[in-house]
Image (cartoon, rainbow, N blue to C red; front, side):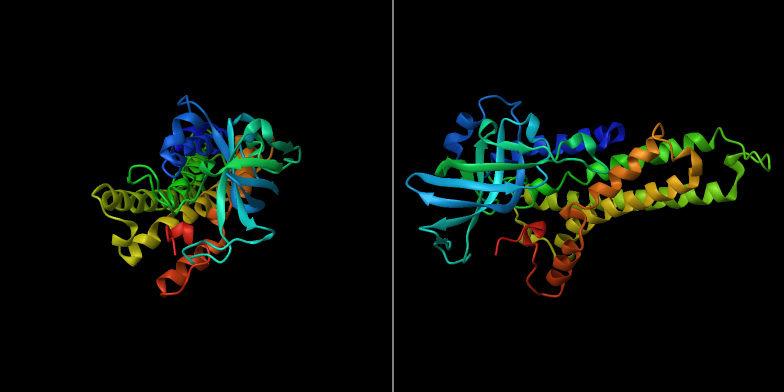
Length: 327
């Protein structure tokens, strides 16, 4: 579904993923408050999961303050979830079980208690409205907080630490598919004005399209193969720990590769179409900017490669949630 949305518009798909994650969040909330928080199935949660805020422990909950960047879709949300480090009496709060010397959590806040910052003036994904936002001394009840390492609902393939990361790679895959179809459509109608040779008979065009198609197919197949294997194990009642080392590493690597491959495919097709790409009326212009921007997301960064590499070598990943590792 995300690929289909991105085929038409990357920003719509990006926000669609964010909104769709609302259902995933309910797996980690206290089940007694889920219907209170989400009385309708069409409610949307957006926000930034990175712990950029500060949450001071108070009786019954927390006082949350901070500023978060890249709040995609918060302008259309009902709730905003934000990551923050926890403090008690002004000091860093350590997890009671000793697993974390400075605990961080997610905090659900009604959208009317969030102040957007009008600073989303970007190269691509312009329609996501991924602006900064601030929250100032807002009380958050304990039951409106959660972590992705503590499922509270029915254990399922969706109640996993990495579940919110899985669908985002559908955005670059949908854009790449749209760009490939667009370029092939042009190649079927164009004739080289200097030689009179149809583009469909041009070695340069044939080679570029075939190479890009091969890269796209391999990247998309890797995503679906890794996700299918993960789903099979989890649906059978297993855990992520039941995957082999290589199987567990395959998903974050496939997600990252989808982003980078899409950007490469769009760049090569942009060059293939030459001056037919450069006008704002060409979708290639938007796809070029959108893929350049989406590849700055953490999912497509070297931190993923570093973390997976550490995991494959028996070390401690920095970005552990990309592998669904809780400790």
